[in-house]
Amino acid sequence: MKLNTIVDKASIKKPKRVGRGIGSGTGKTSGAGHKGQKSRSGVAIKGFEGGQMPLHRRLPKRGFKNRFRTEYSVINIGDIDKAISEKKIDVKKIITNKDFFNAGLIRNKNVLVKILGSGKTSHSLNLKVDKASKSAIKLITEKKGKVEYNEKIQKTEKKVTKEEKVKQN
Image (cartoon, rainbow, N blue to C red; front, top):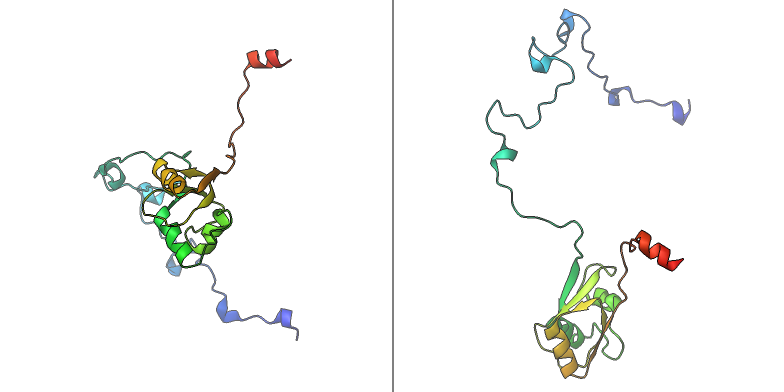
C-alpha cells in the first residue's frame, strides 16, 4: 500500500445521470418537464419576469461615472498638524506620500495626494504632493512653508498629426 493509492470512496459523489430510463427518476424528459421554452436546449431567460416590466428596467437611470477620472486621496492641513503633534510625521524633512502612509493619513502609498486647507497648522510644512488647494497653499506659505508638486505621469502619449510629422522631418 502506498500513500498515492489511498482513496476515500465516501468523499467522491457521483454526478446525477439523466436520461437513463423512466425507473431512474430522471429519465424520459430528464428533469426538464414537458414541452415549452425551458424544456428546450439553449434557453436562458435572465431577468424575465413573466411579462411584467423587469426590475432593471423599472428602476430609473442615475448619474454618470467617468471611467477616466483621476482620483486623489484627500488630506486636510488640520490632520497633518495633528499627526505632527503626535510625532508620527517629522517636520524637519520634506513630507511625501510615504510619510503620510506611515502616519496613517492615506491607505495606499502609491495613490495621488491632494492637500486641502481645512484646519490650522502651527508648523512650517515642507510638502511634496500631487495637488493642493489654494486655501491650503495660502495657509502653508503664511507659516513660511513650501509646497512642491510631484511630476505628473502622462497616461497616453500625444498623437502626432501628419502635418507635424512632415514639420519634424
